[in-house]
Length: 108
Length: 278
Image 1 (cartoon, rainbow over the protein chains, first blue to last red):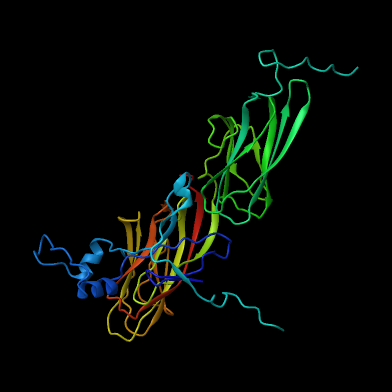
Image 2: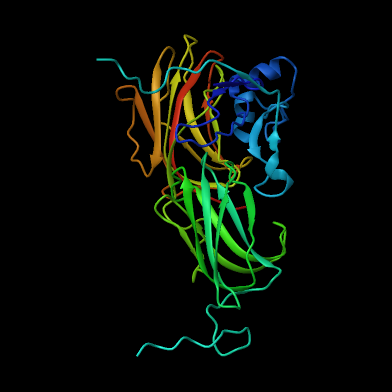
């Protein structure tokens, strides 16, 4: 089990069917965007209709707010040099203990 | 009285053992696009040489596991390519997971110029790819591989976002996740968004808000008739039938009034997957 150091999401790097899983950080949620605005990390644009700054709940419906340090494990391309590199390493990952499996056999 | 053997074949003669002549500087190139771990392919080919002998080749090819291209040169003698096959010798890929292209190329470099396509198609443990092939397949042909995928569990207060891997194409069949709300008083309404990585092209919201201290499982599926309200802590939503998503497209939630201690989890979805070959 890996934990993404950018978004805090946790995931298995290999799915049960034996395929690689490629994590990508989600855009900011409303709670995260609200916190970022309150911390002064970002200013929301002025609404062209109301002439006042958008509120986070409006802004998040109009566009995606991505993390500057987002991790995107997907390949840049499927051939050439891009096939060897992920799109964005972000802040890396931390290895965690694996959770209990989805199916557990109980001894007789 | 037995039939007499045919006259010796020649490049410009009246008959040839096959339609594909390999010159001395030409070889076969096998290129794979694979998603499954531990797959190994065997490549067999038979060449009728000018002196009448038939030479068999026995080679192997190990694909990569991230859907990116991997090429191998199969060295062949000069002569007529009678035929061959590519088959799975390790692991059990499904239709939609291991796509193979066989070509004639000039030289011994995997970057050599291809002069003729011989075959293209998926291989499985039960289905080899034969060449030369009359009608090469597209990697988007067939029913695809059915995959049930466990997604990322986001941090508290964050949303779900699942991305179609580079080199894959998905058809969404079902999407499920559980939202556990904190004690903070608010009316949360989850929305499922499908976008191209930046711009959304489909949204579906559920019909009932979720209040504090509840755990509700949300289920979206193609063409599902939406039931109003929450039944046994389940709510459902609908997505378009047959909607296919390209590499980099996303399935994600956006929850109105989500609170910092709310937690999405149990992210599970069912897709059909093909190799995009982009």
